[in-house]
Amino acid sequence: MAIVRTPFHWCVLVTAIAFFYFLPVLGLYDVIVFLNYVNILVIVALGLQMVTGYCGQVSFGQAAFMAVGAYSCAILKSYFGINFWVLLPLSGIIAGIIGVIGGAASLRMKGFYLAMASIAIHFVIMWLIVHLNFTGGTTGLSVSPPQIGNIFLDTDERMYYIILSVMLILTYSARNVVRSKVGRAFVAVRDNDLAAEVMGINVYYYKMLAFFVSCFYAGVGGCLWAHWIMVVHAEQFTFLNALWLLGMLIVGGMGSIPGVFFGVISIRLLEEFVLYISPVLASNFSWLGLAPAASLGVMAFGLIMVLFLIVEPRGIAHRWEIMKASFRLRPFSR
Amino acid sequence: MDQLSQLVVTGVLGGSLYSLVAVSVVLIYKSTQVVSLAHGQLMAFGALFYWICLSLLGLNPFLGFLLALGATGFLGLIIEQAAIRPLIGQPLFTSFLMTFSLFMVLDGIFQLILKGQSKSFPSIFPSGLLSIGSINVPVSKIFSFVMAVFVFGLLGIFFKYTKIGLGMRATSENHELAQSIGISVKSIFSWIWIISAIVAAIGGIAAANVMDIHYPLPYIIIKGLIVCLLGGLESIVGALVGGICLGIIENVSAGYLDPFVGGGIQEVAAFVVLLIILLVKPYGLFGEVRIERI
Image 1 (cartoon, rainbow over the protein chains, first blue to last red):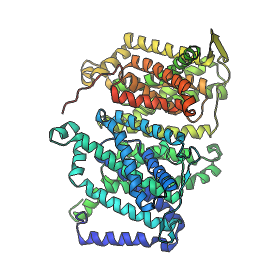
Image 2 (image 1 turned 60 degrees about the vertical axis):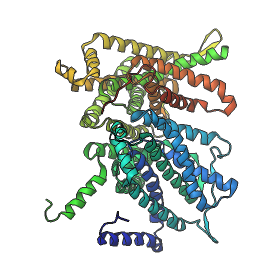
Image 3 (image 1 turned 90 degrees about the horizontal axis):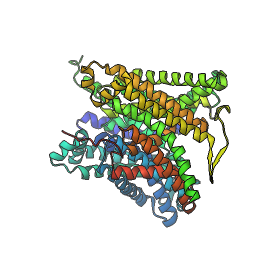
Image 4 (image 1 turned 45 degrees about the vertical axis):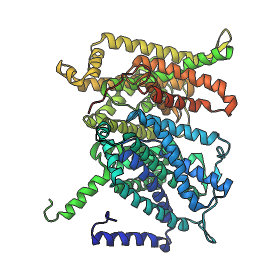
């Protein structure tokens, strides 16, 4: 609880949470769908932030681990009829275990080599999902909605409460993990793994732990995704999705929990903006072709990342810190 | 036996394409320590420029070839000046992320130009099948193989005898030492981007000759990077050997394992090989083992 420092913080926090819980009452359907997607992405990106931002092990495999979570809960539900509330942590743990097996690769390599290994892991996992018997192949699996008592959570508004609650719990625990012994060990491994080892940190153990936590988050996100969309399909977890997740971290800021929120929201807004503007552009400029949304989206995403890498490599979170400091020091700040 | 030799020959010819892509990445890594994903797009744009020269402008094939290489080299120069140079002095991983963002930008432009269609070169290259004994080989693949061998020969000569080539080798050893004996490291960086862009363009044209220009073309770079890791990131010979090895592995595993798992081994074989290589010999077959100090 010490992450909330002043009474003012408490007020802002409680108001914000209350606002988001009352939001479905307003009946803004599009906003709810947008927020559902953002919240799930925040969960997955938080995991990536743990392993990449804090522990320094770049992973392109987050989308595949999300797929592992989604598929494992779809399979367990349809074959064994396990309850949603058991499945939620269980799919996270399954994804985490597979993540640790994949992360074992980081024993001997790091940096670019590890990034390539994670690309390979992504493609191997996705290939297995498409080619194994019990995953439904290219057609995918359908998932029945979760249920509390007699209420089926089958609409976007009803799932919104679940997704928001899980997101809040996981954000809270991520905030706390990061400022604990484990989080400091992650940062030490990121900054210089040899030096960390000399200081008595078990580098390999903490790397494995980072992979487990990150894949746990991805698995939980995947489980929520599967129950929200109610269909899991290999096309939902492409390599491009993994790239978008990494891009969200770059834009938001590596090694910062608020950065995840900034990154996810700004990239999602950018995507929505491109989806909104591309029909307008296509009708005005015929040389763009009939459906330029996909290519324009990729292009805008790439350009934003290029700009952030050149102008502000520490992301929006760094700007946010500067802004907060200047408000705190007023009138002595410039 | 016939099946095996057929698979191996197809593998060698297909692998030569991977070698071409890989060597353009190796060139960049050797002198600037940047691992570039953007070369996948550079090769796609090389093929695209060539297609524009041949089909839209109707130029002579040879002239069009030179023009396409020039245009791609210029694109490489722009990338180096605009995006890579501001990152000098930052962690190496930032440059990797930068090339990956550039990949996305160029991918958007590439798809915008293609509009979901696929383009193929007009039939200036011979096509059909060539039969040697019991082995059948498409002529277009032989053509790209010859191109790859030619490029590797030229690169060998370039690095051994020309002044810029020697400068590049010196720069790849040590930036500061190279600077102190009067080599302009900055201009070497620009040159190396131009040359590797041209090599990538040749690879792209050879690839497009076999598989048409459509949206998965840039993604050959992932295979190219696997080849780099297989052969070692610093080694040009490694790129050649690694590419051919990967081609053989892909084809042989597809030929013998596909009946058991129901197809699709070819897509995943490369990644399994990569995982094994990274676990067993992380620096590749010909790479230098780096010693780290605090």
